[in-house]
Amino acid sequence: MHESPHSRVAWVRAAAALFGVAWGANHFTPLLLVYRGELGLPESAVTSIFGIYAVGLVPALIFSGRAADRYGRRAVLRPAMLVSVLATLVLMLGPVWWPSLYVGRFLAGVASGAAYSAGTAWVTELSSPGRGARRSAAALSLGFGIGPLLAGALAQWLPWPVELPYVVHLALMAGVLVLAWRVPETAPALARAERVQWLPRPAVSRHFLLGVVPWAPWVFGTVAISIATLPALLPSHTASSISTPVAFSGLVGGLTLPLGALVQPIARRLAHAGHLHAPVAGLLVTALGLAGTALVAWHPATPLVLVTAVVLGTGYGILMVTGLDKVERMAEQHEFAGLVSIFYALAYLGFAAPYLLAALAGGASYAAWLVIAALATLATIPLMMLGGQPLTLPSADGDRHEPAVREP
Image (tube, rainbow, N blue to C red; front, side, top):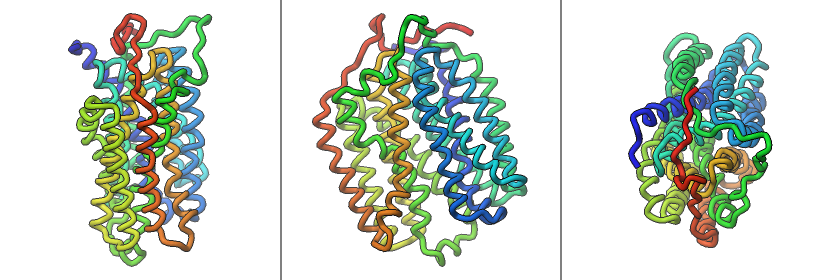
């Protein structure tokens, strides 16, 4: 099925919303070094400010997925874009009153959770079959990656390091709001008599529980290890020799996440070659990235950090497209956003990986625990084989993703 010119424009506009919100979620990361230095924040405060994002994100993911299935995609994504703008405005108050960083990060989590479930479903339904997973994953990955890359560069080399990156995001969101505000709805609101289940039916299926759940946390686990663990493994004398530490922090994220977007066409071809090809490839690359991280822990070197970030980003991209493709195949339209939100919630559990590794390692070798993590990743491959082939569920009119588009 070929896309009409109208559909081609519509999915780009919806993807712009995902891109803008993802940018706002991650441009904060390289600024942590600036806040630690300029505001004198203790390490415990920096860690908790970074982590409170998840406190807003996970409940928003779950509730917004259900809301998007019941009330429509636009009814959820419009407020999410506005909350993303509000989060950035609140973060700008950080140098004046640093506790506002907690509020801003919490709001960024809420905006992200709402946008990712509704926006992913919206982009997929505006796309021809088989293309939606790659497009929504690419929009998120590019936003995740370009945001910190540019924020790190701005904070490193231009004035107003804790204000200018936020101004750029506000300017971006002004354009995104204009583009995405009136994108046609694809999932009309359900009648009051109809019910949307809290737990979508495919979420309890054998294929989802065995074929997706065991490896889903590695979607963002790869990203978290690349951004949080890899640079921290450099010894202090090496880290201090990097003349642009804020930009370097942004570079690691900028390599990991956009690489995930670049490999997604390959991931899509793997997904359509056979239901085990893509996840097995993703897990093999992820295990290789974890082994590379173990090598960094054993023999720290800046070039090795950058190469390993590329490998982890490749694993991230393959697993992200694989998961979204499987969700697209399993869910009907009235449960699609809900299942997307569950997949993202599982994926975001991976952000705990650096903290778990740090807790387990203690005084022992990081390298040993990273090798164990690589082996555990490979151990999920047999579980996927027990999950069986996912079903492609047609919609009521027989066409899985021919959206029921209505103009605003």
